[in-house]
Length: 349
Picture 1 (spheres, rainbow, N blue to C red):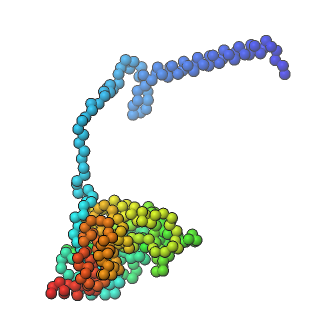
Picture 2: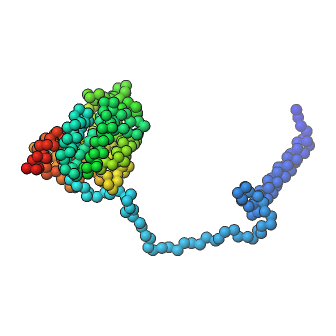
């Protein structure tokens, strides 16, 4: 279809006029909106126009450049909630109580406790590597030991605290079958990735770099701190000695980072969080904490002490031993309650 030339020219002129009118209309509308802005008043019911408001009104105050201050005060938190990072800890001399002891011979445990002087450090196992709690924990993921009368453990802890003992709760940290079974993403996997790696004792190990792992351990520590324990020892704070699981990072750095996270979460001015490790060179984080070493031959004590990287090893390094060997007495030491009668008799003599 051919449109005559005159018609084409007429349509072009009409289009140009309409476009010009549209542009002028949009420009006028924008100017109208800008002009109206001075009369817009915002209230709790929304925005409305107030044409009685003067265009010359100045709403608010003119901002002035602030005067520079040469001296600025800085306040440091020195209150009760400040974390004590000093090394002012006392040396420990006392005994430890395993779950087998209070399961199999509670009467003997109570008898030995009665003979100890007030102020003695006593450590009691409150959560083992299987993941079972030996007390009635209120944590949602806690598995209470079916083979333990947890109420007697609570009574035992209460007796220790009432008599003025320095109480320490022992908790298995990264070796935890129950939590690994419930939270498989937190565990160390087999090389085949078919499932979680299990040690020769049938236990799963948790990944120290996993945030859920440190969160779980923190919740246990904080619960025990709330129960009145002076200190919590995290045993199995290490990687298992095997090359049959997957972990591609720096193991030493992972443990150091986990320790710092736990200290920052659980530390308090009247509470100590400590770590049992198989490496004397492990660098303790800043804060109220100790290193525990177990299965140390008395002839290698000096060698172990020379390897630590922190100050005051006679206080912050604690040996766990099953004997009454006097060579441990120069340092902090917790012995099996089974040798308490021998050791206390020697002190009395």
